[in-house]
Image 1 (cartoon, rainbow, N blue to C red):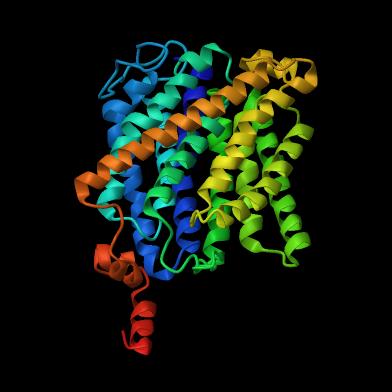
Image 2: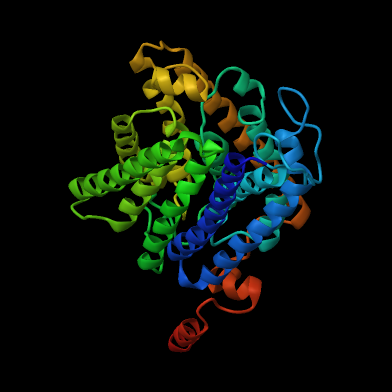
Length: 422
């Protein structure tokens, strides 16, 4: 193995570890964004999400995504075990390790839509089915040489493959599970079921931000010409613009510099630039991140008015921002970067509507497939376990105690119970 090839594999391995560490960000983000009585459940759920995703993706997910097959699905390389040393490109096991981390992230996003009201058994069954069938098929279409790849679809690191797919799974869950107790009043107004720890949420966002340099930068699949630095630059600018734009739009329209909105703006900027980070100029990355930060604010308001209870804001941050990020390459992709990374130049660079059309088609098809497939799988799960949601008593008690028998914050929760006479 040449020295350069060794460096390529080392960089992807480090990037995969950074993506794995993003799960720590999700633990703090999701636990901090929900109530104390469910914090331990959400933290633990994230860990077994990684476990289930790894095993299922090893058994069948990789084969469906990257195995030899047809334009719609891979049909080989199940129970992955490639230990060969590559003469060119990545070692098989390094490539697998990087890709399985992406599958786990998509699943974590999807399970955010279940927060505070779903049975643990539902999590587990859906996690298996989503990782086995939903995520790998979308990945095959775009990254595995499938029909969208043949059309020239641009999705460098996964605004569609990871974020939109996960968000559509979350949407199916929020619709079938229905809102949490006390979220909406009879007159249609909503109540703010605020998360218990904004400091955790902020730290979670920062960890995700750091991990994103492995997420996007690692998608260069090598160190040649240090192009990962350019990808990192665009990633940083978009995240920064998203955070600033979200803070100022919330401040100007509500009169308060809302911290959760700012944090979601940073994430929306990251999600939006994920598809286009290798295709656009830095000034475009700022615009893409800014628009991501703005639309996440209005999207959060829209879903609240539509009575869709999304505790982690997965639909806005990963879904709506993922759609915008995917489409943005159809506007901003430069001829030079498009030629280098695949696809055509965007509309603003004289490329016409061709790339924009492919990007828009991919959003519709992949989003619809992920939603319908997740919805059907949840209906099957519902029939198997006798319902998706915990009882009203268990939801009031909190999933920490009802599903696991102990609180994530035992001293605080026991003190609260004693004060209320519970």
